[in-house]
Length: 171
Image (cartoon, rainbow, N blue to C red):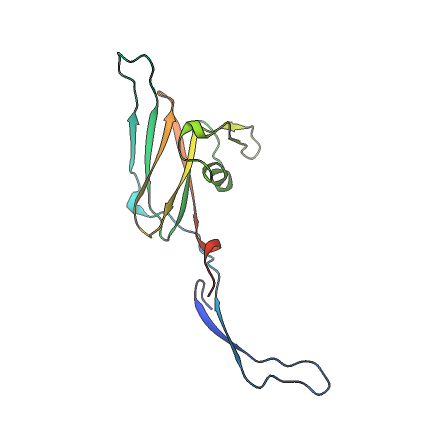
């Protein structure tokens, strides 16, 4: 039996009475085995990172002196990639912590709203920006923008991926 495969299962029932009642015809059930393989990042998007500065013009009274980071990723199957940007010096978050931050945010630092994560054995760590991007097709590069990052700040972007197994409709 293979992962992520469809099969027909034929069954016949019989009870445990002294004179057994036996089903006279077979019943066919359609089943699909569970996806046990997590998505993997592919080379299509590796190494593609761009940085954009949103510096205000010299004659402007107010502006957005921040940096945006565009991260390109690709998965070997459809799924969601979650992103989390934090200071370069922090301990890496777990995939669950990356997902928790990115699941409800759009990539802007203003959307973080004080979210922190606590690495194993560490203390609460501030997050700069986080978000998510749906990858609807395998091996296709999708870009995501993390914005509002303070200038002159060394950051590290952590990523985690999840496939759509929990959303698959059985047939």
